[in-house]
Image 1 (cartoon, rainbow, N blue to C red):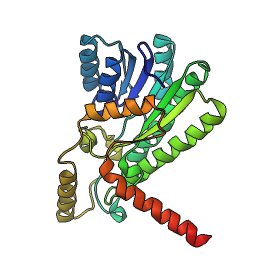
Image 2: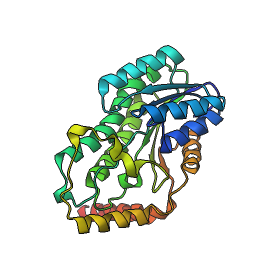
Image 3: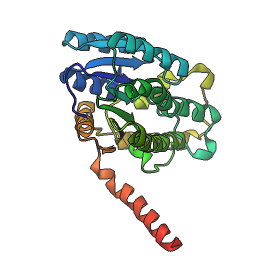
Image 4: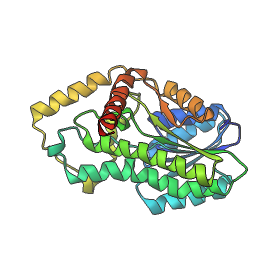
Length: 279
């Protein structure tokens, strides 16, 4: 889809990190922005900054895990903007680090509420409006992770959730191919990026608080390994440009970190070998 001035872009998790970088990049193309985020101060600051730079910005506090709140946000945005051209389901959280057998139900619930149900709620709230624009190209972008196409250890709820986002995106793309070919779908699978994902505990609901069962020594080793992995993250503005280029090429899968390709290809080779063995 060609990105053009005055198109309307909805971005969840738009107040910081990847979402903010995408908002800035889209504002540079002249799009009208509708930013959703659960953090009021950060959302207000981002909206104010973008408006000062000349962007048209709507800002709504919204918890993507709340289906009713997302429906209300969609209605409000449509009343203000009259159309939706680009939907970016970007809001996400990291969850606790540790071995899977020590994970807790609250962690699975929180990570899935935001990372999976948040995407589902975004699709349910905004895609119907896109369906009502048959002559106008539209695009859905879902933010997954390299953890959606590989299986790193010690963050199983996150890995499972991001795998779900990849599957949801591919399924949605096929559905729209049959029913509304003017709407395309991309799923983004970034590696390490400058964002707030490592600090997402700040937004964990109180009723889903967990006390880690991972022994402190093991927890420290795991944390150190992840900090080393994130030592040189891609600038979020660079990632945003890659994503926008992928949207304009209608790429179904947008991969931002080529250094993870061997892991992805190794899985594909295992699948091919298993299929060959079953033949």
